[in-house]
Length: 439
Image 1 (tube, rainbow, N blue to C red):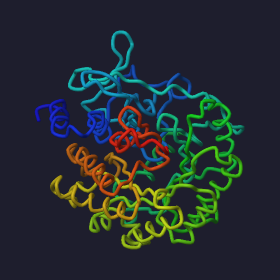
Image 2: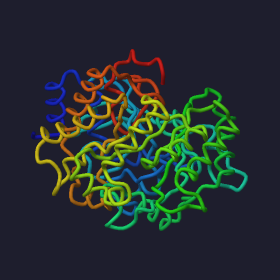
Image 3: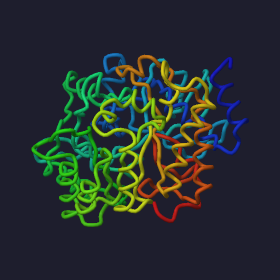
Image 4: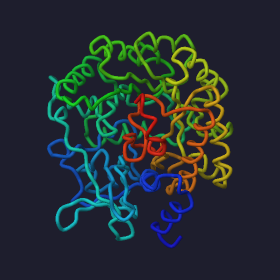
């Protein structure tokens, strides 16, 4: 294609059953977006909710490479509407790439728009600063640092352990920059708490609950790096679980409680359930056996792919299949030098994984791969996976759900184009809007 505009329009025409909103959203997620100075925030002192870096960098450059965007953070997310493609309301997680052909800038009247190949293609909305971000904890920490919200305020993201005990080239997942993100924020002098104190988390949640008068925050996610030994004397199930226990005791029924952790043995998973967790995300990352072994060496070494999948199925007996929602990183299947050489092969492999889990009533979800430059796969694949892969994946995902009679998973807000708030992939934008009974 001669231009990115020609590419997206060709895909919109070839895949008319995939919402055109998802075509642009996936392209922004896989390749990032540049920000004019007129579109940056004033950090926590302004009127726009700034990017919190809630777990990974999700950027195409390190902080020193982002220029002014490292000093005045871009917004956490943007909303796309209108334009020549007549887009319905589409929430997109911000992934900064100064070299992107997409740019957010203000026009002569100060109205933000998304520009591609020099043409304004959508209007852009930015999240207002929530009232709860304007209040500090008693120790002076910000709510954004302790309990940031994403998905347009729907989800409180509690990264209570900011590093991963899979460490170094022989253990770290090859697409993951959690450890680097920790290092770069500390090097920049930013507050970035490594292990969050339970009482700090509860105090931040009290502030959110007090000032979120519209009850926009509906769920929380407890997560962080893998724990192979202990943190603060606790193993993984007890470490993440004891936050859930404290939250559920203080705020019974206020939020849907979710935990992202490794695929743990049945007794550990039962502890999550006993602590009050409602939804379990034991992420399987990539389906293909060879790629799992290459890209997730720590998980292969400590658990192994077959055992990982067995534990996912076992956990469905504890939580119920609908409440087990493992994530995979969409696009790493095509990462050079080890990934599939064609979109056909990559889609066939990923669909095999979808059908495996969905045949057991388990509905995976996915995050669109952002090739962060400090990771081995990001360095080798700065362009990420082809956009066609991501569009065909949405088509295959919808088809697999239809095949097994499944509906949108709980804890992700409403599905459907124009309604979805899940911001790090378009899977919810691509599902039917009438699937909204449980959100």
